[in-house]
Image 1 (cartoon, rainbow, N blue to C red):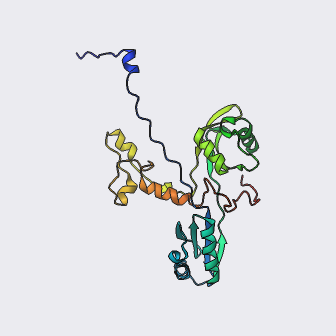
Image 2: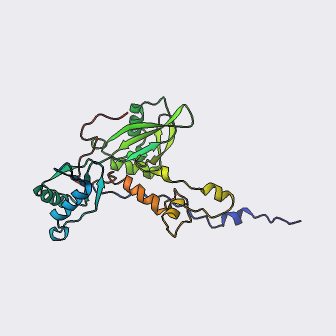
Image 3: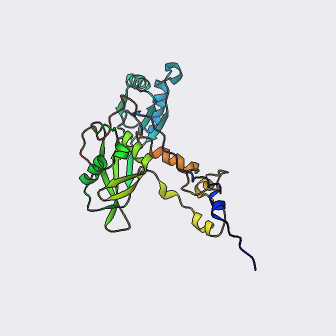
Length: 274
């Protein structure tokens, strides 16, 4: 019969603590200066518009920096630049060549508060953020801060819900850093809310089944793309495919806008979506 050797309290206390779990890195700020380019010719496709842009703009000669150029629906092309100076030079040159230019509206980042009682109204939740959470909002200028409840997600408990809030970049950073807020008589976790456009529905992995059998998990997304590094879950921050789609979804979200950035949807005076 094997004898189990018991450890003393001092031996347990002297054990080196385990390494902290990896945290998903916070999203990087996308370009705050973006324009939407279309052609006056209704028959032109997005490919035709891109060809016209290439002929109209010589980025090397003009010494402008372009973060991204991509096609969207309805024959539109989106151009993002890191600075206001670059986007203005691009816009002026494209207008001279007969292309239509429209400034893109920035989206505000989202956070979700988990398991909040439904009896709390949208106004109650906003007031709680302002008055009960000095640990996260100390010295925050509420005159320039923006916050509203955009919609509510269903929770497992019928008496609770997950409110999703649209907040200004500075408030988003503070809430994500602290990780919790007080709402009425509750202390609830608050998380970054990925944009709805993120296509996580495509991610299907058999990680749970493999872990039950003691096998190393295999990411089905990286496997389908023929990548070598597949020893992680489909929702892991190590998945390059997931990170790519997450970056696309966050491309128009401003997490830390510079000065003189494009107007946001809330600052334009639009009615809130409840």
